[in-house]
Length: 422
Image (cartoon, rainbow, N blue to C red; front, side, top):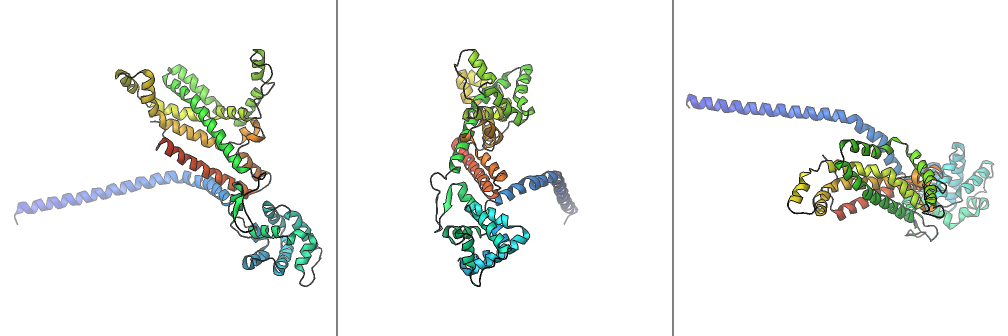
């Protein structure tokens, strides 16, 4: 082998080694940048998980997790789980459970849970517990009869079925109730009788009100966003100030202001009466009209701002080119400008709809009994009746319905991306 060939081989080997070294250094540098970026994001990620994701997950778990009966009355729960019968062993175990629960002051927890399935259990448990604590022990082998003397419902089939449904730690009773369904004695699922149905109508009402608010916001917000992009710097600042002003005022204050404006003796009715447009005051509050007006005012900025951001990123050359090619202004606007604004319009519409679905204060203050949305009932079961299971089931159903509607929206409109502009 000649000296020249050896030198060329050495040069190629040196270049290969240098290339490997550079690639290794680049990989290490990229790895270090990723680790540094992850370290910067980690505190925010942990905060979201700890203070947002985990509480929501815990709440939604309550829709199917119900351990109150097993934790309070473990002996009788074990008898039902093993034998699925309500004979003498069950009532003997329940008697012992009552004495134990009285010492730990936990009878009320199980009574409240049983009452959520069938009313009357709380009073039955209180009377039976008092009798057991007083020492009214049943005769040998007569526990079932002893409970029957305390209250005949203890041996009634419907109350036994309620206990049977409450014993499992994981249950579907709340999910069924949230959809106006119930499980019969044979285990079959059917709709609740007419007069007891409630939540399906409330879900439909919530979606319908949210859709109306979203549509009105789109009709009002699109021209406003377009005007913002065409206005001079001075007027654009004034208009943006008007759009952003609601963010600087408390939600409760804005809702109360609409209550004052729309009431029968309010400024709006006074102006209409004084101008002769109407002969008697209009009812514009504590009904659907007041709810939609206030929600539209509160949520309109959430549609205008993303839409305005997208419109600003569209070059004016597109419209001039369309007009130069012979398109009339209306056709150029509808055929060239509007399609490019669809990502911003989609982002704003989805944001308004989702926020409207979950609103509570505004419909509660401005709406009537038939205008309350599902969030009102979630708050009611959390704060008033302490029925966390049903509240969690309603919240879970609302999340699922919203996701389904969003999926349908994407399929119908063909929207695959939602953007806020460049």
